[in-house]
Length: 179
Image 1 (cartoon, rainbow, N blue to C red):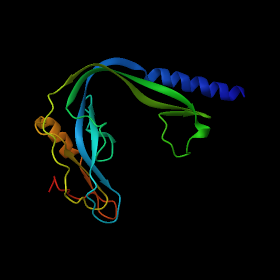
Image 2: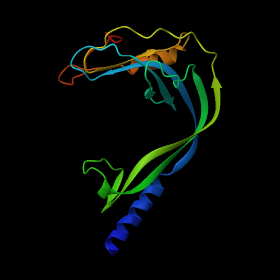
Image 3: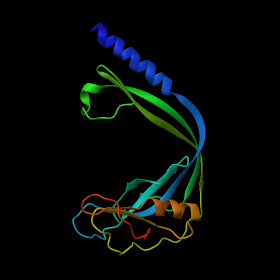
Image 4: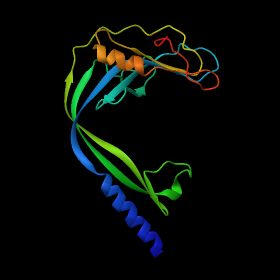
């Protein structure tokens, strides 16, 4: 039992060493059309969605709804935010053995994560919504399209960079936007 206590203390110490911040960052929410096709054939079941760019990281899909869902953002939203990097201590016995820990000691592990506080938001005037895409997305591909007109060039470039296309063996292939 005492050995476990030492491992816990090591994990807490490591988690504390990860802590930093706050850093000022930009967070941008983007209205998108999204399709992740996990079928063996093409699909055109595009969903309304939201994507986010956090502190200069690549665009990431934040969530999708059904085609008629009203919850997706309808304008570009640029926010100023504060970010803290933190370490969280967990009992590793409740996790899959292959889980990738930032640090592990005995039955205790540390996960590195971030806490983001939105400080202010600037909602751009709503652009005209683009129609739901009708293009078929090949099997095993994830494509993203802008959902409103007038997105800035750097946001369109981030959407272009987020396309993923794979063949049936899981190897990357040129997608519709990159060749």
